[in-house]
Image 1 (cartoon, rainbow, N blue to C red):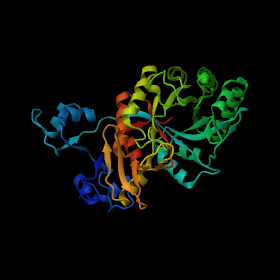
Image 2: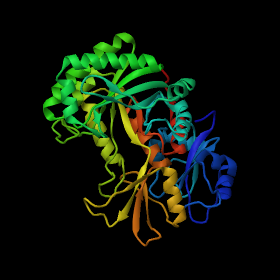
Image 3: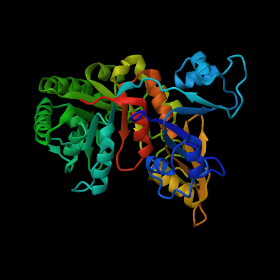
Image 4: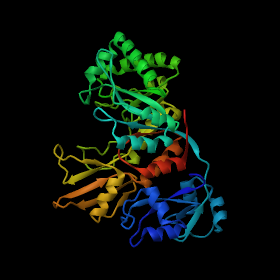
Amino acid sequence: MIGGIIIQIHVVMPGESLWSIAQSYGTTIQVIERANQIPEPDRLVIGQALVVPIYGNFYTVQPGDSLWSIGQKFNINYLMLAQINGINTNQMLPVGLRLYIPPVQKTNAESLAYIEPRGNTVSDLLLDQAKEASPYLTFLALFSYEAKRDGTLKPPPVGTIPEIAHQSGASMSMVITNLEEGSFSGDLAKDILQSRTVQDKLFENILAEAKRIGYVKDIHFDFEAMPADQRGAYKDFLSRAVQKFHPSGYLVSAALAPKTSSEQRGKWQVAHDYKAIGEIVDFVVLMTYEWGYTSGPPMAVSPINEVEKVLNYALSVMPASKIMMGQNLYGYDWPLPFVQGETKAQALSPQQALEVAKNNNAAIQYDRTAQAPYFYYVSNDGKSHVVWFEDARSIQAKFNLMKKLHLRGIAYWRLGLPFPQNWLLLSDNFNIVKK
């Protein structure tokens, strides 16, 4: 809910226009256009999900629905739902019936978004994204400070990012990585983890930089691709970080690769001990995305069925109050046929995906298992493509999962690819905690 207004998700059907949709919800074209940042209001895509700010929340009965199943979906008692809509609980619900859903009390949640300046300056586009997102964020996470083998830091350009965060009540998070020449380096991590002298110097440099840029509340470690024999050393490193930064008032957090068991092997997972790290740090960000990725086969980037498996494992070894679910703000466009080792997908924002669908007269479909939208099209050169991306339905499904599992919050990778619907829905579902 936003200022007494509730966000309704509407999927565009054949023959509908922005005018007819606005009429059906008792609102205006301009309200829907602004909420979704629609560049061409006269051209909608069949299957496109729109967010509609309205006074009241409505649900259209689908085949197989019952009062009980609808009540479960919206976390409301089915008897109350029947009473509010004047329905006999013993009668069948006709498909197409429109039910009023009363608002439910919002829960508190934290949110984090990574912001990654490229080059030597922070672009105006990225600053605009920071301004749009910061009111909805607990943490704006500056990616990244590259830890060096001698304990020094290679900083990213900062620009006015800290001031933008501060003006909206968001806190800064400093992201410390083992990136070296553009890639995560296990050897670099090992050099740091095996030397307390280097660690002490690194911690002093982090502390000095946090004080310099200001508004920092969280020191966030994203060490990836570490060798298996560094599993214990990384745990000890994080323990020392907590001892160093807590007395100065800083939280300490860590990003973890997605795992579904403690035995899971793999370059990205093997050194991340969920149980041990969960006991040490203040919170973790689970990187629950990139099932669909640049060089991988076409599929949803963060299919909810796979995401939930990771979350359930994490919940078995650490409290929900320490878990932030990772969420992508982008999708991918794959040329077809997919050839392993050759095909490369192109990243695109949800807004860009809609434009591609619109320009190629593609109807958007929705995968119920993955809870993600996708579509096929043929480009001007005659090549077939498939696009998997995010929309209001897919992100609402993740918010529902967050509430179901009572998670601490959500962490977005990364700002720079616009997804305006996300921020409206985030605010509609949660009271965002500010530090």
